[in-house]
Length: 256
Image 1 (cartoon, rainbow, N blue to C red):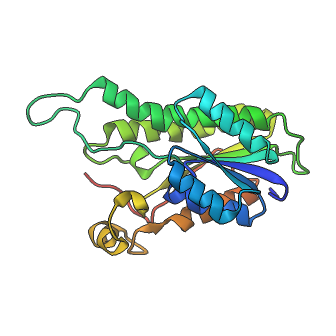
Image 2 (cartoon, helix red, strand yellow):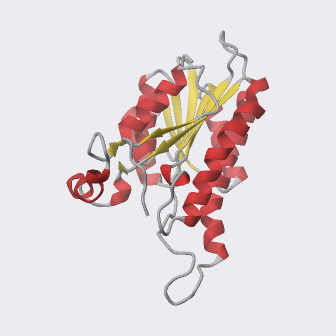
């Protein structure tokens, strides 16, 4: 898919994966709408890349109205051809039942799944609806939605029940959505990152590497946000990738 003259929506675009993806898509010729709750970071990225081609909009993934506004804003920049759901949210480790015999509340579980699974569906559905009204490209494609899963959706660690359930849902959604949207010419792909260094760690890369990077088989380090973004851009350009979740994890498999 050629992005010249098209627009892209990156939800979570002010975060680590998101910023790298915004930069890659802009370099490839797309106008990009950065949708995020992190206003300061989003506006700084907008200013850095130039507001004529890159815009920021405050967006809440759990709100239909907020995501609809982001989709509309992206369409104002050009035909919406790519949408990337890479937003973050709460993911604190907690066991279903703690050592005192107390379970963690349903509301907490639902909040995590609402953001990571419900929010992803919200972005997918509204982006795909807008893309379905695009004129098809020479390849017959009208658009692409990339959803972010996690290797925790395949093999969760202790304390990840809500996060794993949400990311496992994203994994299952990928093929179902790709088949649903095939008649519209909209592809759906997933990316499942392993252990990546992003600003969310709130420590230096050296500290994070020493704690988590040594457990990665090869290369023996944490992933870098631009490696996620590079894979996203490859998916954009390869029309035959559809309905699959690609792990990007250095062969890491989570243990207990």
